[in-house]
Image (cartoon, rainbow, N blue to C red):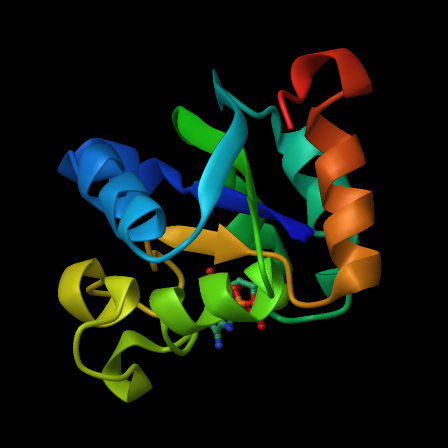
Length: 138
Ligand code: ADP
Ligand code: MG
């Protein structure tokens, strides 16, 4: 069993696809064990995406992530990290495989509907960034 952090980004909330995204997780062996809606501040978004601080899109990305409510959740399942990344599809929706969340709903490389942890270390950091132990119903 493995845990990963998923976020329905502000564009996903705006487009009304929270339920659709969660349905795909639940239909593919990923169980939601914690969830909440958050409106990140610019500072919180910068902290979350600290690894990208040197990237040219850092300022724009953190503006976007703090532009409206997002849904953050912990997914649990076998190979949850890789399985979630598979369901999400490539970062750029134009390169994402058919049937993936980003391919189906994203219209922009930055506004790409979902976030998912990319490894065990980042999953641990990202889960702790939003949730304490008492909020996780594993
Ligand atoms: P992923 O979310 O697939 O793990 P990255 O970690 O590389 O992708 O990037 C984090 C987020 O930054 C992406 O999901 C996307 O919102 C944004 N992003 C990545 N690359 C670009 C880019 N070239 N231009 C604008 N935004 C980008
Ligand atoms: Mg990433």
